[in-house]
Length: 492
Image: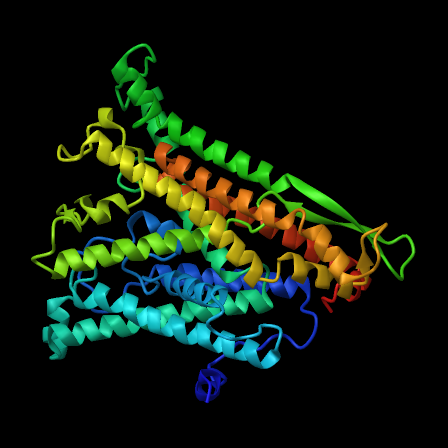
């Protein structure tokens, strides 16, 4: 008896959001998307009952914008469990260990059920150490005494609320994917990053410092008496870093521009319809063909490694020094976990800012940067390949989609194998180059810093997802105006 036969009674009964029976009008899709976005903002502003007023350190730290949650809220775990489950399934599927054919409807149900089950398990495994170790989400002793359930009872109560929040975000993602525009994961990342960027520009107290415009208002009107002369070391530092933050503004604008430009760079393969004379189109193979979503997988993998290090440090008093030594704020200062920790801000490598611990040597930062760069570039390329193959964007799947839509490449026989050979000239190479480029840009943005202290990966994701969301909205509007196009491309 195979594992599929054993697990099918459970996996096939996992709760699922039903797909719409027919075409969903564009206006209704926007309503579903906006409604889920409001629910997301609502849940990120609700603290679990029983949580102490003084919260512990945020274990996700700079990964927070990528994982789209909020410290000390019901959405504490964010999309982390969803991404982690995707990583596990992609690795198992890539090694052909699952034995599932995603073209088979029965196996599709099992795959989706397995993914949901993994998300439930990972949500529990992620939330439990956050709550029960007392390091990240301490319980309020007064609540335990008032209810007569003790500290452990309050911790169990907090855990239950965070667990439910993790399950809610799973189904919110599914609702957006089936009834709305784009994907829920992408929508939540845009929301999380946008909050930080808006705060970085306009807040008078954004992330512990004044916002960009507030700082310059103080500089111009004399409320912040500092020198901004580029001819002195102090003035140049004030201009580029705090309070001027010109370098962060430049990096934010540069990343925004380069991602939009990279999204527009493409090889367009001409297509013509086999039955409709004069109907022509183009299949675009973009430079960032796999999108920047595989970067979520890479950063989530790094976040899980750092999470393991923090748990070991807090619970294992005799942890060997070669594994890592941690500061009072829970940051690795040496050892394996230090070198595996990506550089998230310029203060972690620029000595003249005076925020690097004395125990950290220049060669240690160089090794750490080299490991992060290698991990992001190589990991970005590998996960991009996995993403393309598992989401039906590979040469074979693309050729079959073109064949099913009734299109063909002019000058070639109308045969999926012929179209596949043409696609193989472009898709694999562009996938690797695009994945490596996105990893390089993410590291560069982290090194220089951005407005609102958004991580480089988070900014890349937000810009690229917003661009794709704009394209999807334009496509939906076009199909709404011309219903025949829905029938031609199978979107009825």
